[in-house]
Image (cartoon, rainbow, N blue to C red; front, top):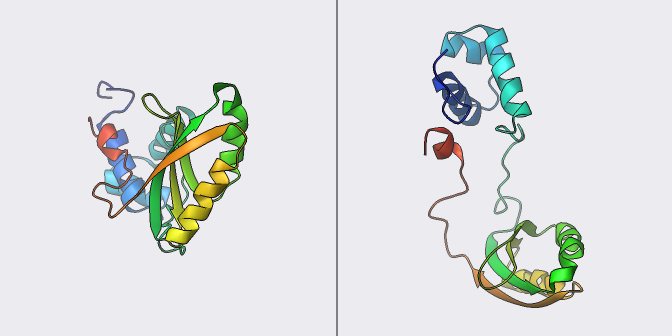
Length: 157
């Protein structure tokens, strides 16, 4: 086996590419395409899941195709003592796609989705109604130039 860089070797990287590019491909077919035993594929996938490299096998969903074509980024300023409660409240809003505690101006960065601009305003109003949220600053996305991705990191950065 080749030396591992950050826990992944060349076979792991090839497997990750196949699983991402052809997610419905079975283990036997992946093994055939890579020229390794099915047990090797299973063991390596199990290891990458256990190590947290692979976080799910579910389909990636498109907010646009689900009827939420408008996305925005909103930064919330919050009372520091309220962070756990705010996290729970944000998770309860379906239109909040992700939320991160950040450094710099603002405290929590959220990516939100809406049916239209008015719906984005409603989502912002919901976040502002959370106890401990003081104010927000929001920008609407016009287009995506680099979608969320992780594969380049697995490929060696």
